[in-house]
Length: 97
Image: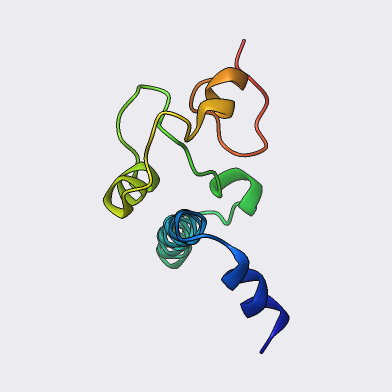
């Protein structure tokens, strides 16, 4: 068995569902960006477009949030650390002032 498969199997079901939702949301964003490139839009670095918001800054449900909700892994604790740092900011972003 591969090292990565072993690591995956060590995760509990909730962790696997969460990471799967994040993967699918990331792939959707990447596909949308590739579509823009094919239409002739300027290529942007991934640090610009590869941000998964949970939820967005206006409090609307994002694609990632919908996937997590549909997987049944949304609860009070999910995203609570992000809310403390700054509501809805993407991974690696600084808190809004």
